[in-house]
Amino acid sequence: EMNNNDINFHLPDLLRLPEGIIKYVRNEKEYFLLQDISICADRIQVLMKIYVQDDRRMDATERIWKSMRENKDPFVISPLLVVIGEENQDYHLRRERLRLLLNENFEELKKMRESLHHFVEANKSMAIEVQLEGCDQLAKEKTQLSEAEDFICQQIQSLFQSKAQTTN
Image 1 (cartoon, rainbow, N blue to C red):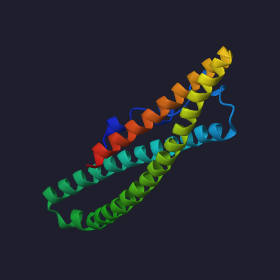
Image 2: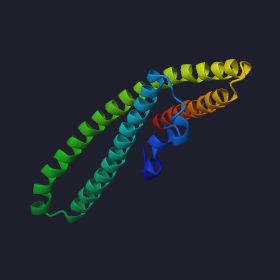
Image 3: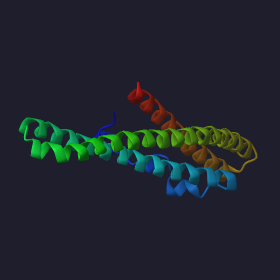
């Protein structure tokens, strides 16, 4: 299960091109892909925060239940038993929905990573070609862009490795 440390980083920042590099993107599909990656990262970040907050809420509910059992007063236990039972059921339904949404977003991010990798390779090739033609500035820009996009691909891969470790 996730804990508070899992939400201390800001995922969208890890999966976004630096301001100075984004201006080198000239391909519309590439630009919109990078925007979609950021949007997906935002969604995953929000879902992960909800996941952790929900765990905290369930922990509090379990502490209440434990103190109620120790109380053993039926006038205290009976009314709260219904509330805690409903909260427990709602928790499991929310948890299943959150897992589904997270998995959907991770799958989307995985596909986008594959698409971005194609742009990484294309930008590397273009940098070499334009360098050979003497276009040093464009070659430098394409190299920086491919390196920044490759970093994003690596960050996404690391995210998948972390996800695999937490679910196993």
